[in-house]
Length: 265
Image (cartoon, rainbow, N blue to C red; front, side):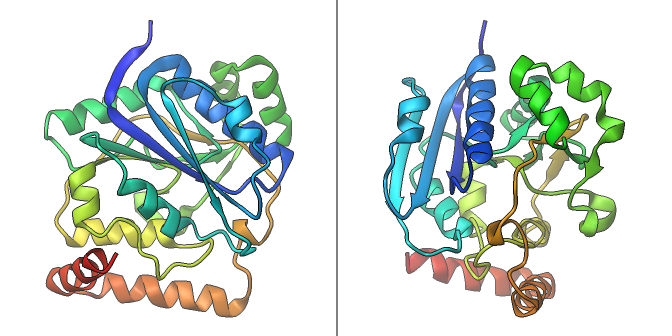
């Protein structure tokens, strides 16, 4: 029996850069559909529409949107904002196309938000584990989350640069209104890198209450091109600069910056 998460919309922007990425998206969406009565909105940005995603992922709970985009850089922050402005449910899930976890962690995070004990809920404890190609292949054939748990010590922990707070991306549940009021995603971040950390510190500066569920998040491994790493030293330096700028803003400066951006969209 599926759990009622009809008050939640999971938004997933994706650039299908490999067959592995497409398989990961299928596994991620399948897991949500298997456990929840919910809404899932996928946005694909690509040079042309091949129709693979809407052919392979179907259901009344899934909305698919295609955006023609010939830019080799996947502008994820822009597309998350585009998706978020279409959300009509009180809760929103900001979701990667390559993540699975114990469904009870998602339930726990949603219940915390519904009870108004938090504004932002990470449905994991900060431990974001990369499965490796071998363990991912086993999960793909058997859909066995217990297998991933059993072998978690063999996995690498991702995105620990944030320090003691752990990883802050991949899977997030939030009150939709609060997410939008804080500016959604910062579109100064063009391409991959550090946008998750910037967003987290911005929420803290706004005084948002942040909650973490117990349990890890599994990242289904995939090949990485320029949209999975810094493209150059200049790109890295700009991302660090943009994150540090936000960290040093006052709450009033943040409101001015992001309220202006919302009004101009």
